[in-house]
Picture 1: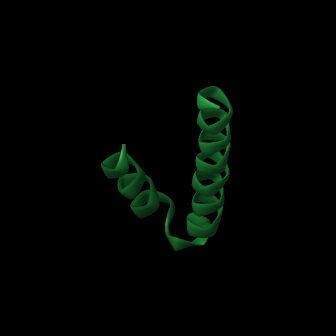
Picture 2: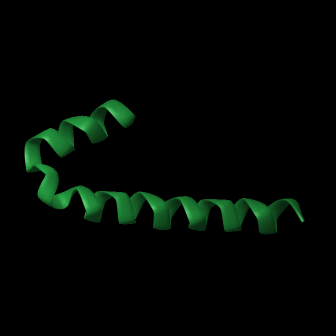
Length: 40
């Protein structure tokens, strides 16, 4: 997954770096919230 992400960043360049980072952070927060709700 991480290796695939690095390959994507190399392909598209650093211009989309912030966009990729935003997607990762947003997905991560969503995942944490869902897990938090599930176990509580």
